[in-house]
Amino acid sequence: MSKNTLALCRQAPYGNALAREGLEAILAAAAMDQAPAVLFLGDGVFQLAGQKPEAIAEKNLRRNIQALPMFDVETLHVCKSSLLQRGIMPEALQVPGADIELVEDCGSFIRKFDHVLSF
Amino acid sequence: MKFTLVIYGAPHASEGAATALRFARALLEAGHTLYRVFFYADGIHNGSALAAPPQDEQDLLGQWQQLQQAHQLDLVVCIAAAQRRGLLSESEATRLEKPAANLAEGFELAGLGQLAEATAASDRIVTFGG
Image (tube, rainbow over all chains, first blue to last red):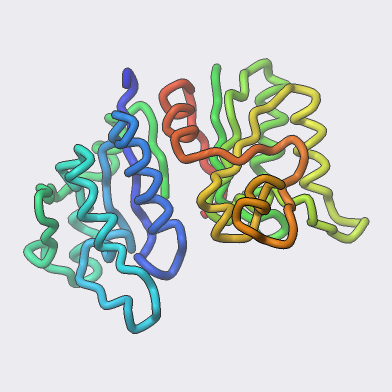
């Protein structure tokens, strides 16, 4: 696509349906060869941390996350200060097939894109 | 300028739903183009034909339908988000063997591809609610 798009993942994984539905929208765009860049920030960084959603009868979001690199979203950008504020070690984030890239200055990172889809 | 609005807010629950409607009206009055309105997540409830707010409250559905008619707007409700939450067209209700359909006139169900396509085709994407 001619414009470059950034998708923001801002929601914790199971508190709000937008976490899952955001990932679904990203995968749908990627399936149309319009893969956006993705930035996890705020509570959205919890989407990349370990989860055991069986206990609350939810489907694991992990499957959607792991599908991202298969759909050409190979770099997952993560807000560094959001991680630190929540006590998540960057080393704890591992997605097979994806590169995790920490972003220090999210403001100037976001500014580089033509469009931002916020989930 | 070409706009697409993405709405996550449910009507009469999130102010975002009403703000989106006013924003749509304002941009059309200012001479801009509204390429598409994409209803996603809880925003799909904006397309329910069954909303019956009290008479002294604003009728968001009626206002969307009026605006749609006046400007031939493309009001698209995400089909996957709608199925989850129980918003069905006649054909979907039949296909899924559900007892009723409730998609309002002027709205259509379509896939997430419509959001990706609108993102590529628009100058501005503005998100409401969520």
